[in-house]
Image (cartoon, rainbow, N blue to C red):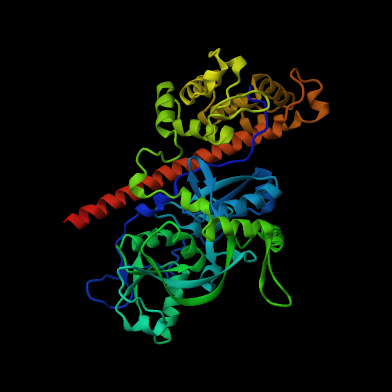
Length: 508
């Protein structure tokens, strides 16, 4: 069943969740009622993995998956009603699509270090609006830039007569909250060494720029530093932010990659050159149409990001992954299967659109084929709950069919069967046996599914030609998405716990 084409999608959460983290800050300079936050190394990057794994483009291509390390925020990567969004996500996805790679998103979790994730092989690039700095280049390489930004002070509207120059700011006792491992901190230190008497207050390392801007908007902090594009985007859906003086101009933004990945770096540089380069005559950046569209969508006050934002107080009832979280959880729990896996299937099938119908006739959230459904009235399959129950029933049957396998292979075979039908999967297993491979290992059967696209193999298969590449990608992307959903839920729980602790502290 569901033998149809599938568009690549990886869905994940509402951008407002980055707003929930409340942290305690420390101070770099000696100030009254402030504390110094400890640091591990001179750079504040706290890197522990200094020898990168061997994984260049050939290994990535063989795996079929490019893994993007990023933060969960409205300009990097977020979910809205189950649909994946974000400037960094869409740019990396374009590169992945050009190289026929599935894209896996690795969210940096609490107490995780993005450089360690990269060099240990948990991801293949860091795409998180990173400025190229000498401190970071000690541990990673950077691609060609794809953006130029200015660093600027941002104030809460609690600041009366906000300073418009660095000299005025140095004369005011206004704490500037930044992370120790940010390029903003390094720049503020440079200005301190030039004689500007700023008060730098350290924020927790797991707070990104957007989280700090939310703190300003809520008047929990007085000042921070942000890139001008992030300030511009954030001011469309955050109130109470005021623009301050610029502290650095024309910082270059790029992707970070391992230092031993020359082929990956070369391919990414060619990709970047198509979309961003400097004019030889004027020295000004020239952007492709694609990049200009992304910039307008996420940084220039266009409608989408502001619409996707929801205040943290509205999160309850809207769902973390999709608008159907409660329903999916209820139906999946009743069938004793993982609700996040069901959500991942729906994201892949229809991007949570209950009115979807494929060219093959599959309908509803889970793209149920009416001829295989116990619901005889096709119109009822457009009802979200009816469709969900039918889809879960069918996937449960596939899981039972492969119940003798370990969990990983069981899910892979069940998903493949849901997508391509039992006949094609059975053909692939027989073909694996013909090649002296274990038919109970998904790796072997996925290879056989790819072979079933070649006439010399499918001419003898019982069910003939199979678009195996679609099924293999289908399985891979759903399993990858499931991992990301797990990370998002863990991150959400962590931020909610932080918020509760902060509220208790304020009450005390």
